Structure formats: structure tokens, C-alpha cells
Image (tube, rainbow, N blue to C red):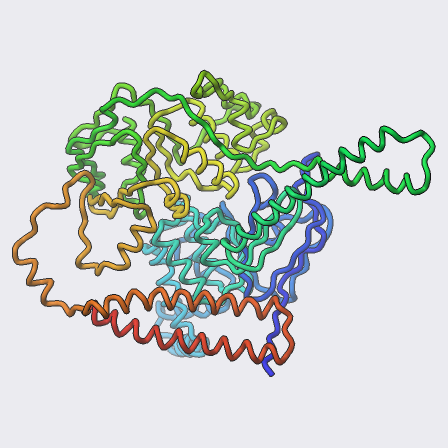
Length: 634
């Protein structure tokens, strides 16, 4: 009989945390078991980072306790990593708490003194005994994937994004029993994020993380834990499953609240009719009335933005780029770009870090000048520019005062308007919060406030540079609702694939070395296109160029020289990809059930056979897929 034992790594028991009068949470409990990949979801300012700090040992709860399994090895990736500025990238990796790293360090030292043969031989043998050769290759590969290839650069000379990626590499290489991460996808480009997803899918990490990246939650996590209105809810499944069950929970709560309101009115009428003398039976009913009243007056703080903005109409000329080029030294960012933005365009910008995305935005808004060519701005264009730098807050300022510096209201159609306070409410700052001092806000709340300062100016050409960093999922839903109603031009740089899929119509793909591709679709469309097109055949159409340009006449010879799939084989290849993905999903769901269903021995044996059949089928289909792929690639 197959017996699966799940080891408990950590138990959170009735913990509470407050800052003065502000209660983040009270008496919450949950556990983390071996093999779980948990995504923790909550609004900004409700205690996500505080909870992570407690799990990592950097903070302690006011009440309750956190119990770790004895000798549990943990690694913590914070939003602001604390690295030694005097170490190089390689020294930082080798300084991690990992015995294999000490063996590698001794071997590296022995290499510098080969004449000490006994020391060298001992170091060499230790490398063999602990498979340290593979580890050295592994850390080089991980650093390469995270674009940290110059191992001799000191931490002090790295950008904030490079430091975060170095801290991520260090955490991964420790291969801890439990990996705790705060926004792991921040400062990663899309290629890095997808690599990290694949790494977590194939390797046995136990994870507890906070992230706003909903596709990352979907593809990595097998459980979602939500902190909502001070209550903890757990969902055994990925992000889609969580959304489905959460919506059902909220609908059920709304139904119960509605029933409670009706009962409250009925009981209130009864209370008013009662004489002063109470029977025992009446007293019991009065006690129940108090509970009913509490349920009836529950309110959710979720908001949906539905605005008919009355912005200044864009003219026929919006923004035009004429033969624009920009370089820094020998590095060409873009060359000879011609493009005319049209009214209502919704463009997403993607590409690796360092390919010129932010430079492009700064050039559009006149903050930097092109090396050649010109940018022409229409007379009616009013830019709203959300940058990565954020906003400078004056000491002692209150939330409402910050927004009013930029505007008192946004005009709506039919003579209506939305005040600064109402805008803040829509972006989840209630009336009380609006009169808090800005320094009391969390990092995500400050980003949310910054968004409000950009929107209150009522721009008709909105530019957002990584707007989703540090925003919680609830705020992202609010922002997406606002942007879906936004009638002006929209230009967005973001690594949040879910966000991009929802709000943009086409993409500028910054491919590096001066090349920008104009792709007619959203991010998922682009990935399907990339995955289905052999690398050597992918056309790169510069932004604004006609893709009907003639190609050299001898191109057909190159095409004919490569092995080709028949039409039926092409269909089979595509079908296999979908079937394998479906089977992998079935395998994951069934594996999760072993931990949650409480099956007896007979049922475990039955389900184990089903699981093995799925695994065998996946292997068979993967083998055929590889055969076809090799033929396709030649």
C-alpha cells in the first residue's frame, strides 16, 4: 500500500500584529507543508510584508507564535535585499549559507596555489564527493539567466534591479527547505519570469510568496491563501481556482448579508413593539438580534471604477515620430523609427532590461532629445506620465493634500465631476485613510497614491512605466477597470503579462541592437507567435514600417533547404502541445488531491495507478513531440 507522508515545515498559530491603533490582523493561523507552493494574497497595507518578515525572523508577532520544524533551512527574498556592498557578485554567491559553497571556495583557493599538491588533491576530492562540479555549473547558469554575467562587479556598483536579481540567485542556490519571497518577479524581464516559472515547475521547491503577477500565481502555485477583512481563507488550487471560489464566497456573503438585513428590519420592528419587561425567551432573541445587526452591517471595501471621463479631445495629430534614432555610446537603442500614434491607441511595450524602453518614453515626453529625427506633439495632447521614480513627498503631508496639489477634481460627462477625495476612495483610500500622514503608508499604498496624482490631471495621453510594481491584486483590478474605460491614448511598459493582455491592443517589442518590432496583438498572442515560429524565420518589422517590403529573391532556397513537416504532422505537433499541457494539469490536480482528500489505503492505490497512467501517457506524447520538433528544426 502506497503511503504518502507530508511533512509540516511551519505552523502559524493565532498571531496578531498592530502598529499603534492600526490592527493589521488578529488571531490568524495556517501551516506550510513540504511541497506546497503558496501564494499569499491581500490588499496593500493589510500586513503582507509584515507577515513575511515574521516568517523570515526579521520581526515577531504581538501575540501567538510561529513554530518551525527543527533544523528547517529557509531562505528569504525581500523587496529590498540587504547585501554586503563590498563583495563581488561571485563572492556574494559563495558567501551564502551552503556547505557546498564552502567546498567550492576551498577548491578555488587551491587552484591559486597548485604547488600545494595535498591541499589541492583534498579540495578536488571534496568537489567529487559532494557533486560540487554540478553546483558550480548551476550557479553560473542561474546568474546567466538573470543577466548577472560579470561576476567581478561589486554589489555597490549594481542597480536596484540587479541587486534584487542577485538576491534571488542566492536564495535559489541555497535550495532551502522553504523559500519565502516578497514580489520575486519585480525587476525581472519577461524572459526571466518565464524561466523562473519553468524552474519552479520542474524542481521541488516549497514556497510561500507574495506576488502581484497573476500568471505567475497561476503557473507556480498549488494553493492560494487570502487575507481579507482580517479573515484568512485558504484555497487548494491555482489562481484560477481561487478566483472562482472567492467569487462564490463573496456572492454567498452578499446573500447572507441581504438575508441578515431583512431579518434585522423585522427584528427591529419587533424590538420597538416590546414592553420593558422581558421574558427569558425574549432576552435570548435580543442577544441574537445583536449578532444579526453585526452581520447586516458588514461592508466590503472593494470598488469598481466606472467613469465617463470628459477629457480634452485629441486632434488629428497626436504624436508623430519622424526618423528618430537614439544611442548611448556604442549602444544603439533604436534607429530610424517612423510612427504616428492614432487617437485611442493602446500600446504595450515589452523587451529585455536595457533595450531602451524607459528612454523611449522619456523621449516621447520631451525629457530627453533624440540623436536624430524629431518628435512632433499635437497641440491638444496632455501627457500623464507615471514613472518608476515615483513622487517626492513633503514631510508632514497628508494623503489628500498630495493629490490636491495636482488637481481638485476630474470632469466627467454631463457636467458631473469626481473630486480628489472621491478619486482616492475609488483607489481604495477611505475617508479616514485620506487624512493619514503619507509617511505612514506602505510602499504599495504610496504607488497607489502616485497613480492618483497622475490621473487627477485628467491627461488624454497616458504613459505608464511599470505601473504594477508593488501594487496588490485588488488595486490592479481597480486600475485595469479605470484603464479599460480610459478613452485617450495609452502607452504602457510592464512585465505583468496578465495586465498587458487585458488592456493593450498591440505591442512594441524592443529586441535590442536598435530593433523594435510592431506586433498586432497582446502579450499572449505574441508568445504563441514566438513559440510557433522557428527562430530563423521570425520577421522583425520595425515600428511603423510596412511588412510587405520585398525580400531577396534567393530567400526561397534557404527555406527549401530545411526539413519540413507535412500538413498532418504540423497539426499533430500543435495538438500534442495542447494534450501534454492538459495532461500535466490533470497530473498536478491529482497530486494535490493526495494531500487534501484524506483517502484510505484502497483509494490511494487506485488513484496512484491513475496517476502513473497519466505520467506514462505524458512521456509517450512528449517523445513523439520531440521527434516532430527535431524534424521541424532540422
